[in-house]
Image 1 (cartoon, one colour):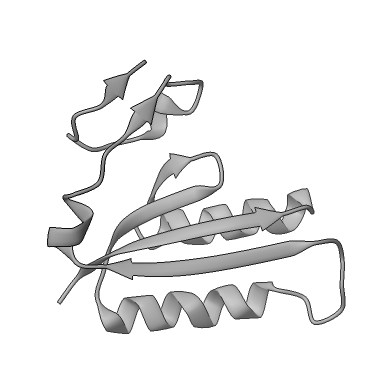
Image 2: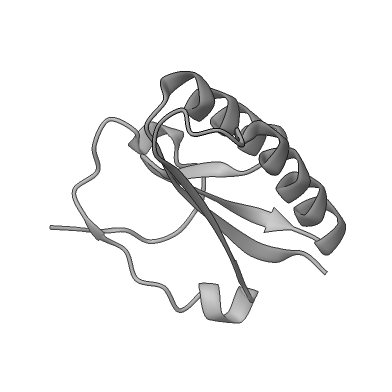
Length: 102
């Protein structure tokens, strides 16, 4: 069963960040915020993505980096509320959710 997968990251090194973003897009995830991607993945694809993300992460420090994955049921995800002003990445957000713009 595909569950909503959120990937949050803070990666200081541009080259590594671009590789991570490309990998997330390859798995069909869409940008939700500058450092957040989301999409629906089943267990097999999520495990494969985590494995590939791990291989991108250097063992020796090349700058600060942190990647977090959260798995949320569809019902729980549908309870989310979005507030804010859409900025330059808003055209990358590809979903039909209702947005409250302040």
